[in-house]
Amino acid sequence: MRRGALVQLVLIALVAAVGGVALALFVPWLPQPAGKEADRINFVFWFTVGICIFVFSIVASMLVYAIIHFRAAPDDDSDGPPIHGHTGLEIAWTAVPTALVIAIGIVSAVVLSRNDNAGAHPFHVNVTAQQFAWSFNYPDQKNLAANVLRLPVNRSVLLTFTSKDVIHSFWVPELGQKQDTVPGLHPTLHITPTRVGTYPIICTELCGLGHAAMRSTLIVMPKDQFERWLASQMKALGNAGSNPAAAGKAVFANNGCGSCHTLAAAGASGTIGPDLDKIATYAKNAGQPLDAFVRESIIDPEKFIEKGYPPNVMPGTFGKSLTKMQLDALVAFVTGSSKGG
Ligand code: CUA
Image (cartoon, rainbow, N blue to C red; front, side, top):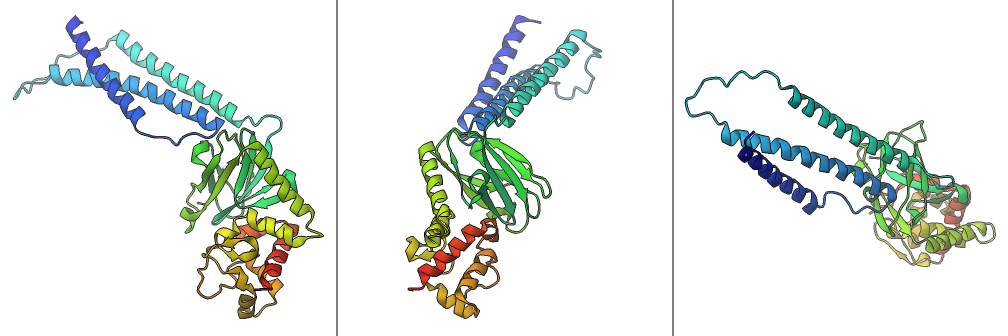
């Protein structure tokens, strides 16, 4: 091959490579990772992108060179010279891609096995999916229930999934890992959050009309803060027998009830759902005793919808995920707090 041709090929390849690298670097393609597993997944992604840019620059240089130098003259309808075979070239274009694909396979396999390895003592959380909400409970903390997932930072966490109806899929973009929840199975997912912060939990499997709204929140907390939160919840629950209203207040706060409801005793001022300071009036409208009405509204929110408030907003999964003790405490707190109002 002439030296001039080689120089041109290399120059075109360099231009293509610079373009590819710029496209990779200057567009924020991936969310900022917040977990060890996401870091590893991103490594596989960029490793593969690097190989792609390498292959792209070679193909682009050949293509551009051929277009410039071997362009047929106008009205030249003759065929090109009959070339048959070039063993060296064929070996090269078989061996190089084979090696690259095997490399991607090996790197992926190593990352998959490391990401799935939860270690000997992971922190356990059970995740329940139901059209159209997520709920969580902490099996080693007496099944403490929550509809917001709180986790300590830098701790290996094993999520175990249950679906009550159809296939959903659990995804926190910043954590990389993703898992389908399949009815009848209990798949697990290992995550290790490494950055304190608040992240969205998204359902990524079309699961019905409310699919797009099937979201929750992951709050990654510093270890001591998480321990304090856990201890305060456990303490409140431990005292549920002697002081159910205080335990109920903890359940109320823990499950984000205040973001939709107003309740003076909880310092909550949400306006999406019914004003719980007026719950006694609503019970009368529903023609039920207060205690039974509150209990029913938590477990089966669609049974009675107070006038002026939208149906299908309150997640029914939440009430069903509470232990009996938590539910009793929550009912005691809501009924007790509203009597004055
Ligand atoms: Cu659940 Cu989409």
